[in-house]
Length: 103
Image (cartoon, one colour):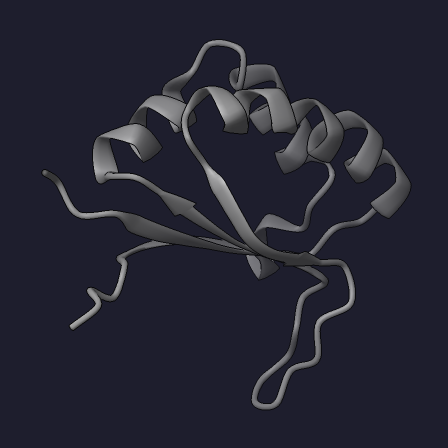
């Protein structure tokens, strides 16, 4: 079975109310459809080093292909466009990495 992946989104959101209404809320159904587990999400993270851009989310996908399907989902594309419109892309990141394997 393929290994799970973790996605860390650090987003410099410009309008938090619109972000929550237009992106975060409708995203929940798409997440369920693709088996996404939301491990953590907060609009008020504390940076111990560097600068926290705003909203940070940590998501777990059952495998990389599930992430790819989620990201390419036709229902996600308008949400992706809206997320990009509501964030400062120069200060935002979306990173995919292998999940740690339990010993």
